[in-house]
Length: 404
Image: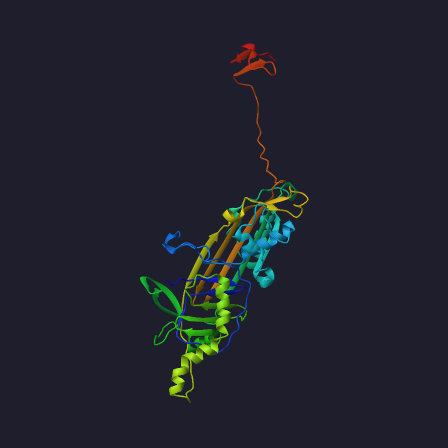
């Protein structure tokens, strides 16, 4: 069964959920080595947990860079070339240590990163920072505790990142009739694009269609089941790549496939028109494009605590001082992505709570205990080291009290 996969490359959104019937004749070279290797799921889909709609929940079907950005800052914080666990690295840690995505891969206007002692002061600073920069509020800060203490009273650190991307299309696509996905006739979904022999009342104008065509480029069209295209946003700053595939390969492998197949674009076109050109050698090839893309809504919260938390991590001076140990206490990442006929929007946050395990500060809670014996009580006297008291008295009233 074909599946939909989504992944994010720099600011490119790469999906695999599109139908079309032709290609443009512009060669596009796609290059990237920044995607993480996310292994294909080992479980069959029927054994995976299901969401509220009954769909399989897989851990590798959405990727965003914010947790990687936090991990990079953690490496800088502990002062080591990479994060190294005392009892051997989890597979995920080894992958994150490769730092295939860094903040230099993003426009600084689109991300926010903060690192500091986990205090209420830092939380307020982050809240102000993301509001001033994005006019956004955090979805994850309230899931962490920020004590109202001075920085020097805690050895717990908080590492935070937010990525916000808006992807407006240059004009509106047509809203298409609702239709099934992957030929499974149980639920119809919303689509947009341009379809053959279908007229729409909500099209702003044919001029908009021409504008949109100017922002869409075919990467390749091998056949009706193997193609990819690129859409550039209204501001000519962001790119969205859609690749039709049902492969369970890693995102890195799939992106490499796009690159390789893009280089064969001319060959694919020649193969598709070979028979027709033999019959009509003087014919002019004219390609008309049609597009059908589903609306998308993703709201995913993920933690990596099982793989990464509560395990000893070597500090900078661990070789000379085995007590130099760090520990990850909590991890969290959110990805919110929406796409309709007007464009797309991505908001992703991530956080790491870490601490120096040996010197970890335990917050003190002060209680006022009033040992006021101004009500009935009992008194015992005993020798130190002995179990039995040698004197006892019960005070129930003022009989044995001294008058003032």
